[in-house]
Each structure stands twice: as C-alpha cells, then as structure tokens.
Image 1 (spheres, rainbow, N blue to C red):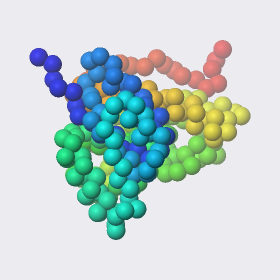
Image 2: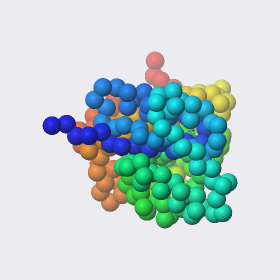
Image 3: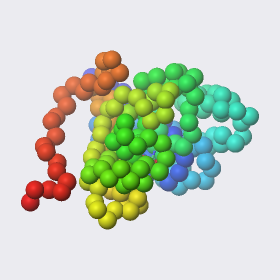
Length: 219
Ligand code: GRF
C-alpha cells in the first residue's frame, strides 16, 4: 500500500520560480507530496498566477490588513489548518514569522535561502558573497527556527562564483540550483527519510556527491 502524498502549502511573496519548481516536481508521477494551497502575503504577484495555472487553490493574506504580526499569523494558521495542510514550504516568503508561528509548525516548516548557510544571512546575499570573495556560493533548504536564516540544514547546492560576476549573475546561477535543491528536500522529507538528531539532519540512503568540486578547476 502506498502512503497518501504529504499535503503541502507553499507561502510566497513574489514571482514564484521556486514555487514553479515545486509544482513541476509534484506533477511527476509518484512524487510523495501534493501542493494543496499557495498563499501570498502580497496581492497580484506572478506566483499566484503560476498556482492558478496549475489548478492549485490560492489565497492572498495581506499582512497590511491586520493590526499586528500575531493577527496576520492567526489568519495564516487558520487558512492552513482549514486546508488540512501538513507541511509548509517558504518559497521567497518575505515576512519574518514570530516564534509562536514557528513553534506551532516546528519541523513542518522549511525555507530556502540563496546562500550556503550559515554564511550570508539576511538580505543582499549575493553582494555579501561577492564582497567576501568566496569561490563558491549556493543555496540552503533548512528547517525554520525562531532565529532568522538558521535551523537544521536539509539540502545544500553549491555553485561557483566567477571573477566577473555581478550580484545578478550570481543570483541567476544560484536560482537554478535552488530549483533543484527545494524539490529534492521536499521529496526526502515526504518519503520519510529525514530525521533530526541534536538539531542536525540525518538522511536515510543519502548518496555521496562527486568530489572534489574545484573553482577554478584543475584542467
Ligand atoms: C529566492 O532566491 C529564494 O531563495 C529567496 O527569495 C527568492 C525567491 O524567488 N528566499 P522566487 O520567488 O522563488 O522566484
């Protein structure tokens, strides 16, 4: 007997390219998760159109319509519970969530961040990476914890930083990596292969990647 797919909500604030990667992954036969709702805190963003085109129910919960963060998050929570959501993916969701919300959804809430955490938290991540002169950057999918851009790391993908990169060049290269990393993390979780031990993620049957990735390469 196969398990029912994990019921997922994706929270967005913008163009939703990561949302699209998750939609495409969930459309694959046998993918162990299903997106039951897409919620945006910003009205009229392209991500909502992507969801509608895929036939996924959407909701706009505009934080500006609420007197404070708690009231906004109560509305978010009510929508999620009403939809029978079991798991939340933050895909470019640009609101900081309070400890109360994070605790309510603890270990059922993941985020994607466009750097190799714990390096380069917050905003202007690619500028930070270029200023630091790192040879690699990338992205991180992690469980959400109350402190911003922290929490157990599930998947990371590395990309080289090139000498002439602008922040936009690097962002575009990292974004391609994000579109692989986020569906992979969701799949591993939905397959029940991810466990936590002392706030570190263990993945059953994880494959060793090819090594080493050098930048510049030897050849
Ligand atoms: C991504 O770079 C993501 O890592 C960050 O916000 C961006 C969202 O892009 N948190 P998109 O809306 O998924 O295209």
